[in-house]
Image (cartoon, rainbow, N blue to C red):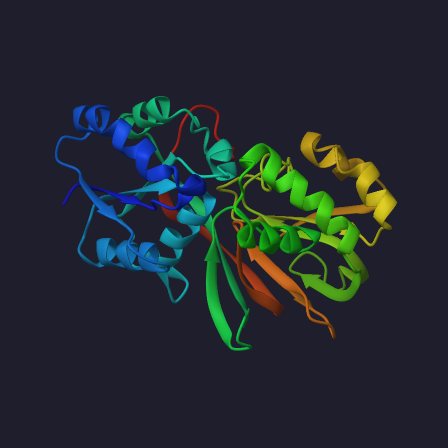
Length: 314
């Protein structure tokens, strides 16, 4: 089988299915032999991705947002390696958040994204692996392709996933960010990495371990991140007061926060974080669990379709 489009109809506040139907004539033009697999329930996207990998599908296209991509990646990987190393992942961004598409240089305009998919330009990129405790206090393996974080970002992701995201990607995340800042309580965590065995110990406002540059509906959290350098960018924002968080929120959209005195920036091939308090973890906008956490970079573990000016090491 050549190409399978895995569609998450609930993506984009439930608008993805209609948007995909409107694209079908163009899709048949570019991919006349492609199949469409529609997700029917929670967790089904991951099951369909695993089925595609095990059945030797050449290319899987994620139709939805960052959460849909994350589900597919978790279906494509097991035991820290790709189930089918030859499989190529493409993205048709129709979700609320499409931050990872930015790093790939894939247009968020559906017709332009289809053209990029049809071009077939591919690149091997890194994938993040995480060992963490799930929401039922059980240890689990989890994969991410964009950004994993803890602190205010994880609180915002959890709040966004519990809400309707009625305001769309450009307002939902900022609105929930402001709401979460007012309820956010600083917690102490200890962080070490391949770069520094005693990276940080203290209160944390945000810790992002990034493969891609953007998260949270357009925040430029890791401007220096590259998708294929075999490393993850570490951006740690130390504990700040609520007024300080509000005052510096805009710097996250420009990337200026990395030059502030309260931010530590490094890179790693692995990172560990632990705390005596309960701390949520988010990965690609999903909420898989919490600390303790170990993250590893799986170098060039996945082939993806890229557009113009992707975030790659040359």
